[in-house]
Length: 233
Ligand SMILES: C[S@@+](CC[C@H](N)C(=O)[O-])C[C@H]1O[C@@H](n2cnc3c(N)ncnc32)[C@H](O)[C@@H]1O
Image 1 (spheres, rainbow, N blue to C red):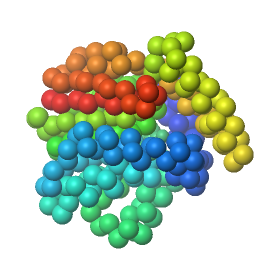
Image 2 (cartoon, rainbow, N blue to C red; image 1 turned 90 degrees about the vertical axis):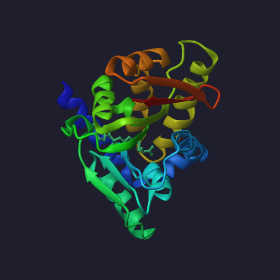
Image 3 (cartoon, rainbow, N blue to C red; image 1 turned 45 degrees about the horizontal axis):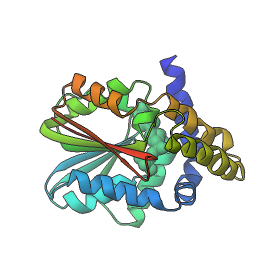
């Protein structure tokens, strides 16, 4: 079961990889860039620190973090889907960014307990993991003592609340309709299902505390459409 969901998610992102950045910009009206900047600003990466962008996709967060932590620090972008990671690599070649290490790996299969990162970020990745608690545990073990992590994703709002209704309308009428024009509607329909299975604010905080994080805070942005979880050891 776990295996099939991993394969399903990997196939989705390999399939949409060539249109991923284009559709991200179009479907979010470019706002995803602001939300990612917001996450990075909250995390305050410093020059000389070692960071990881998990589920990095085409590398937006990795590039933002790279500009803050290098030249003395490092940034590693990790993703399980080869095609989307190849786009990240091409983008870093174009930008002539030699600082980011790109690694193909399933986050849940990382077996590194060396506490090597000062910070870890993830955007729109946690929701896709087979086991969210395991994902947060991996982050915990990868972080140095006093390390911090931030996760940006759709907010799973209370059923039938205004933001929940708006989210459904947006996903069904805008996201699925536009992605249909590119023959990618089954892949983009997956978003609504994945939000349904994604823990709500208080559950995320509970999981993070159970895993061992001392600080766990959640804030909603964009009128409750998106959420940012900030954790510290
Ligand atoms: C919605 S995209 C987000 C990409 C990027 N972080 C962004 O915000 O644009 C989700 C990414 O998570 C990756 N992913 C999903 N499950 C994963 C896993 N178990 N391990 C590593 N990467 C995973 C997918 O391949 C995909 O690139």
